[in-house]
Length: 233
Image 1 (cartoon, rainbow, N blue to C red):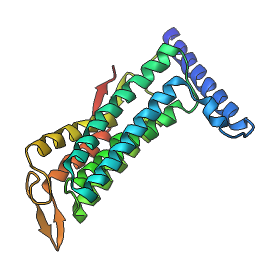
Image 2 (image 1 turned 90 degrees about the vertical axis):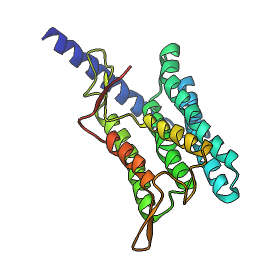
Image 3 (image 1 turned 45 degrees about the vertical axis):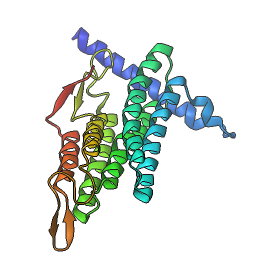
Image 4 (image 1 turned 90 degrees about the horizontal axis):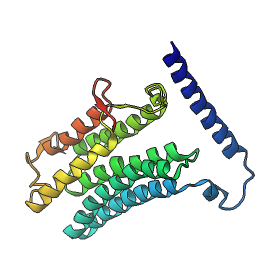
């Protein structure tokens, strides 16, 4: 019972602190660039994550318009860079003993860009451009968005007595970097483009489907799974 009361007190205190921080942020008088004053060092690291993901998207689009494979390499390598920033923003927050009321939201939005939209655009760039391909890519992105929204809502419920979440429900969205690494192998072996992707392509009713896109379908489904639980380091 004492342990339960302690856990309850920790969660209550965390909720109270978060509510106070949000109220303070909402009630501040508006001034130019006032929001920037709320950022802490960890938030800057998080924004480096979103910048890496955004630049990856731009590089993928540049490949589509130029056909230069070096842009694909850039698009891929920027995603592990985003992952590094994603790992270190939490550590920087703990190291500096600072946090901001926008921290969790910033982290989720950055992850959507870097590990949801960017891998999907990369897939489109290498040839997943049929109607069925695009539908599955959209499913993948929406699974990532839903996964992060669920985490934000349930994090406090799943926290232990110290307020730390000890497991991931569904695969974490940064796991999608593995898709980019797989695509790197395909590029090095020349297996990319409309006709060359593994599994070839199929046409149904005039609409194209590449079996390789099922990698995205599986990844998205694992993210929203309620039965897959992965210990959080």
